[in-house]
Length: 81
Image (tube, helix red, strand yellow):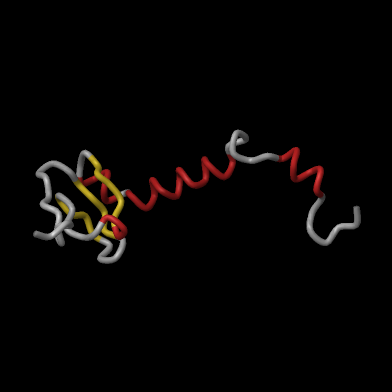
């Protein structure tokens, strides 16, 4: 008896964006490491890369995740302290 399934069965109505094939898939066709999702609609899945880029930008500029006081105390690389 195999412990792991080689392929997941897709669920109708769940949409994914495959990073390898650069296409929208209904139900997971490719391995989880190669896809974003699930999304509610194929249109949302089609915009997965834009959504990820927007979320990354929000994270990079979120003051809760950027400790500027620590950076100010340490100085910048190459500067004399």
